[in-house]
Length: 350
Image (tube, rainbow, N blue to C red; front, side, top):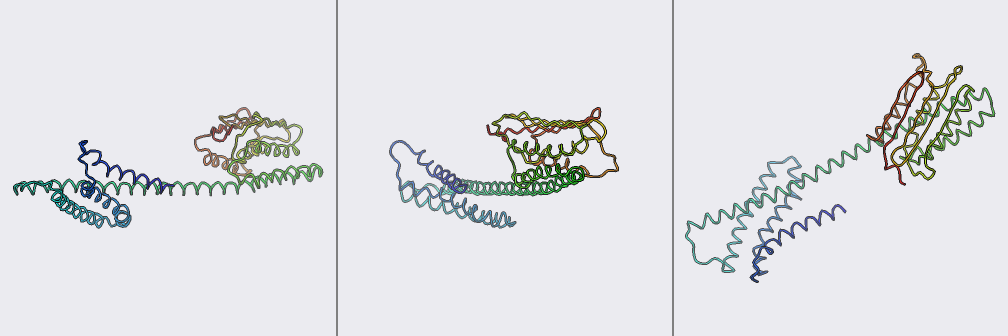
């Protein structure tokens, strides 16, 4: 399609150039097609210089690092064609009987020189235009290649982050189930059933760049249900949503799971009253996930996790939603609040 558009633009430009003398001719009916064709040699030389540069000189010599040869060949071609045009025009004028009498020799050379200089300038402009278009195409191609390389790098980095999410997520979940087997076998079986649904989401939906927000919310709800099984009675957990039933909002899969994991990891005490409040809302302008939990930070000597999950969340947000998200975090009165707001109306197809 690009080649067709390029061909059409070239054709249009040359048609205009060749028709200009016709449009500038008088209205007295003195136009002669044979005479026009004879004198159109000047426009033809513009085509020659343009495409010799476009297809040969610029790609082979200018881009090939042989700039001196590029300029030498252009000078030779332009001067040769300029003198050829002058000889041809002189012949045409004689053929059509335009030149009357024999002007003094003193006026011959200056007149011919002026026309030669004019033709040289026109041909130089044709060569410059051809070179400029080639340079523009080269820059555009280089920019496209840079964007493709950057996009490929981003895709590779996202795949790497997803590959890290799965084992990190599974490790925490399996540790929870392992602890549960020693307490209550039936509850452990229920936990395994919950985990199987979660794994289907992790293994299949996580491979897609975006999924429906309702599917992601269902996944998070399954995860919270799984975590509730092992919690003591002193922990209050709330998972609420404010999403229209017919919402078509999409979101990057598992973008919030690390925040939820972090809430259960640092927001639960075995002896003190604890709470985890999760709320997700969405409209046609934004998607927001707010998590508020009691804060029981682990001692500095505990290096489990090393904050890998939160670093992944930040990196994924930067790659997927650059300049279109906010992440607010604060700790007050032994409470931790984390809010991610994604501003991207393209993800809503209502």
